[in-house]
Length: 228
Image (cartoon, rainbow, N blue to C red; front, side):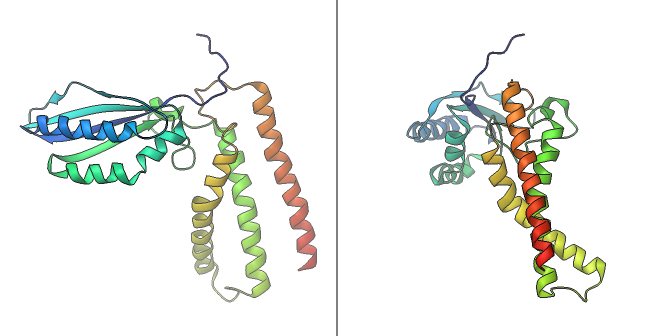
């Protein structure tokens, strides 16, 4: 199978499952029409496909629909929009369970890596890229934290176990909320899912950026440590 080089992002889709009370299927269809009309007003909307319902043995109906947008960014805006959240709240008396899965929406969590199921493993970048990206994010956070705590004498008299748990909580929070989203966004061209074709030039460019940034940070932190 041949893949062409695609510079623009793949179209992105949201697959949603609603478990509907038996007899409420017409209400769900009307609710879905309102949902689709609202989604149409958002940039990048392509279409919303309503699948045939699945009638289950326990007197419920599973309803599925697939919403398509032209880019991960536009799909994310729709998923996180207050209008969509309001529609989900309105529909709570029609369906009592709901879940969804988005495809090609950027990086879920840090890297969209799902362990234990080979079908989902390719949603994240190759393992070596994940390792390099995490080191790139973790290294400056740990160094700045260590220098700051040492300079201001923070937790110097604490036991190792107590200081370590606090350090880990601070580091993990900064990494998850600030650093990794920033890196994932700016290295998006390089941290592509494994199933996406990647040119050698992009692979080398991303690796060079990460390596040079790490090298520069090592030099800077060595100079800082000489002064403290």
